[in-house]
Image 1 (cartoon, rainbow, N blue to C red):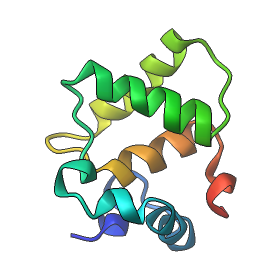
Image 2 (image 1 turned 120 degrees about the vertical axis):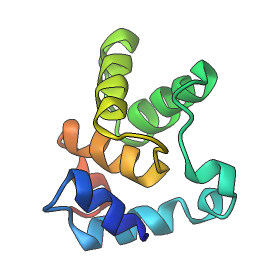
Image 3 (image 1 turned 90 degrees about the vertical axis):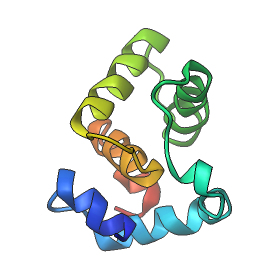
Length: 103
């Protein structure tokens, strides 16, 4: 299943252009099969999502607790394996930051 197809299960109106830009931005990380998924059982990985993606890439300036709550909410929307681009797209949409990726 493509990243776009997975994202559209949770965000039916997802922009193919935004997803393509995200795929380009994270192409190196997505080459590693383990890096394609976000491990919600690993607190260190969730901290990296918060620090590197939400704060770093999206520029969100909320408290760690508020960001962690948003990350948990997105995780709750996605059953089973959580593809990284799906998590990132839903977080960017949550914060109104799809424009970071051309949306």
